[in-house]
Image 1 (tube, helix red, strand yellow):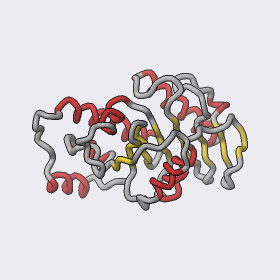
Image 2 (cartoon, one colour; image 1 turned 135 degrees about the vertical axis):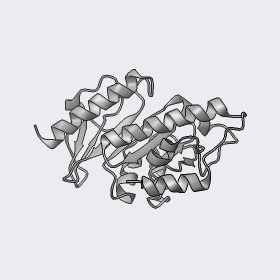
Image 3 (tube, one colour; image 1 turned 180 degrees about the vertical axis):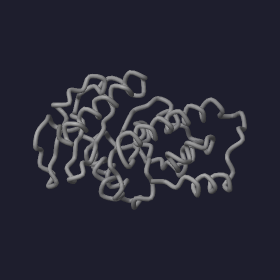
Length: 213
């Protein structure tokens, strides 16, 4: 089995896992994977992540020409921006997960650090999450907003829309996305209760021992 075929199977597997656990619903959410050749696999537009057919996943060559599969998600420019600005990016996941979206619309949310440092793994796997303003879905300006971060963030939260995470490979990216959503849930549960946050020193110790990929 070719690398492309294997990765298409993995995309469908992880997409269904996230859909089945309610991390995204309907036809929302999208995934992309960059192959070792530089070619790109992207989930197709208008398809539920719970019922993806690997054969329908969009496959682009290094020139951006569609080789096979259906038309890609309209959020492709958003994915491309991460690949262009973070050389170690091997996969990108974008969901409409409930708790993260809830944080994106609350006025007290810190736009430079959406997820408070509540857990060690949110620091290790996700890091600081930048809140980006609202864009109409599919607007190429979302990609430009990511490029404006100059590769300094592996995760962003689109206001009124959902989180986007880039990682070294598909598995690591899904794990980081899950960590982001669970920490967003914790943030909402503990909001107003004055939770004890990890100190700057504790966060630095975590990053030194477990440096970001």
